[in-house]
Length: 312
Image 1 (tube, helix red, strand yellow):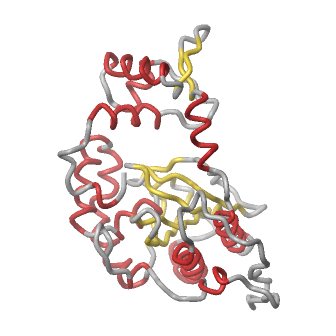
Image 2 (cartoon, helix red, strand yellow; image 1 turned 90 degrees about the horizontal axis):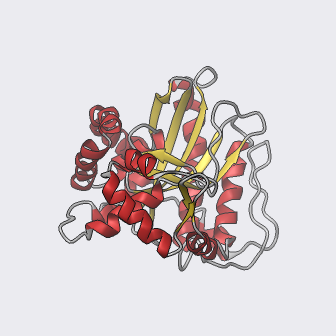
């Protein structure tokens, strides 16, 4: 569900929405769930889940395992996702940017996109000595209890963010309770500084910082985020040492998104050398730098974004 879809949902076909709710329950290709577990996860009656899983099985989106009496993701869903993952040149460039930050900070750096009440890791990079946070591509994190989620919600136009929060209160009340008292302060802080911090929200051992970016491809916000051990990086250190690097990362990734035609999954680019940041923080460029890389130098922070459909 994109930012612009939250303000009004009178034309949503519920059975389609619920079918996707069922599919969202399966995190990872190996996940196996019965109707009762699916019902518990997505908050739908078991009879409704039974009809949906039967239909999704007939369509090949799910497979029924008689021995376990459970379902798993089916071949049609796998084929669909595999097709979407072709042509990953732009994502490779984003991953290199994330890795650049991961080599300077002992944490997990991610590029996430929204999916209803969650954000999904599309790319990530992790320092060799990173501890305490082990998200990977495809991992889902809650909007209500993470720095990335709070940054995403704060970046939305107030009426869109409030609509998201109201729906979250109905379906994920615990996550909504974590977000509501913070959302106004997050909006103001994001407007002034271009990022959002959440300390001990997802876990008492993890502090996070996130920068939202507008995606022209999907007409919604995406987020670059980092999680670090709270014992090593308290809030003051996040602001002092982590924020400048993450804002710079946001500028670089934002430039990649703006310079790309098509979408994040299918975009193809000529393979040419890109910038590499050495330890002395000076940028070394080869003689040949592609046009998309050159555009990453243009500054466009989240606080300067102005547009419709949830953009501030």
